[in-house]
Image (tube, rainbow, N blue to C red; front, side, top):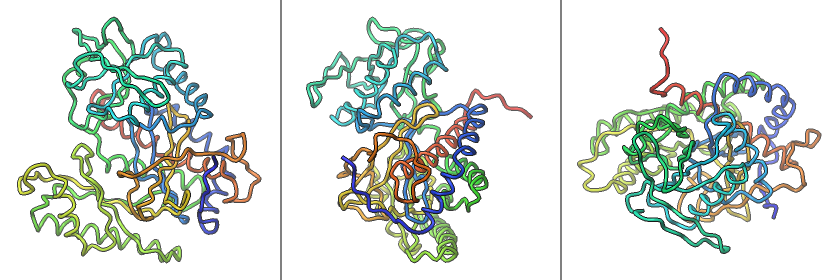
Length: 431
């Protein structure tokens, strides 16, 4: 099925698409040179928003799930990328242990793990799925739709190695984002490749650090394309150590929200955009489990107190101070079957391997779609080829639009590689 896309077919997004297509050789060479200097995350997914007047990433996931939403036609790309990624790390690799999220035994998530298992099996590896969830004490089999099944086995820890019974892997692939902290069983593993590294988890990661790195690469890409970097970059700010029950802390947050809204209004005026600007406020550290609050006015700050306090476990007056990311809200002008939609691009190593549209019938164009009630529609192509069509009119070719999504997603992936280098506890520091 080719989703019916209702997108803005006029305005700056088409000019941007044309510049991206015209600059394709320069873009690919630029990425090639970057990957000579920087190591891409092992795998990643990026949520992209197309407002019709700008295209920007709003979230980068280094432990992506949703692999089950990739179509069979996309699997050869994923298998090839998996081969390239493993070959770089451990050419003689034979056994791979996949470690899923704790307390994630829902059908959709387990189907995603089954798809990852399939990809790495086709890439030439023996794959077992080992859980570090204390609730998984014995080998546990789950039935999946379509007659497939998946088996979770408790991870066993030796002196320096991890495995499951009668299975000694050389590579361990985490699909656990470590939101609850780094468990001791994963520490001091020296004889095996642990991917992604532990500092890619939310114990260490901060969204503000990622978007600071993204801002840097977006400026360079903007220069390469000859466009304002704002067209591919969501402006942001960080507000540190806010206690939700403290009026002074909330006032500081309100002031920063107003500063960012003023900057966005200025840009909207510059480009003649009639939409109402807004910001998205979210916990800088996803490990706090905080949701996302959309604000179109800094006076709405009491909304933050109410929404975030409602998400806190226990008594809100005991809530610790925390850091918030204030991010420029990027509308989505895309619709699939009358529902608002945003593309999610999947990558492995440095390659785009596929993606899907996240859709939500109950959400508006300025709201977070990654919420209960969302559904997924594969990115589909009207032609048998996934390659861009350089001669097509801007806005008229799905492959061209998807290529542009892939460029922005790879920029976010490059930013993640900068971020991981900057936060690597084992990196050498040069004076």
